[in-house]
Length: 100
Image (tube, rainbow, N blue to C red; front, side, top):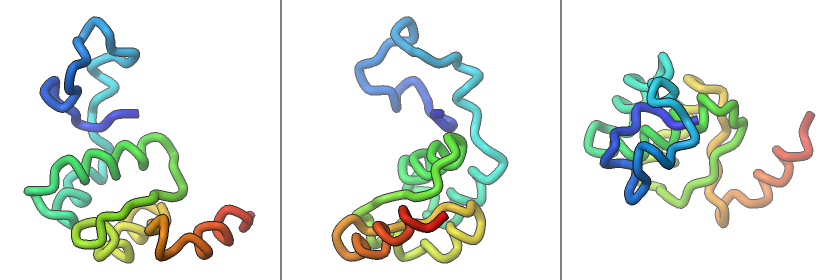
């Protein structure tokens, strides 16, 4: 479920091609805090993370060590989503997937 996306964020998709309503683009209650954590200049990172939260994701894979993974402890505490690097944390991710 998209979060706080603007028309310009959609790339080449037109409003008529959307499978969501514009109202679905509203941010979660945590969006402002996510944006603070990953910093204002990383708005797209915040959108991806908030969209994952809104969609009920339990894990988030990212190679962004600077803005996302360096803040994983704070993001995990806030959202209840686990953050993994797909190469460095692959074994931990596999264990996570098998944990009930």
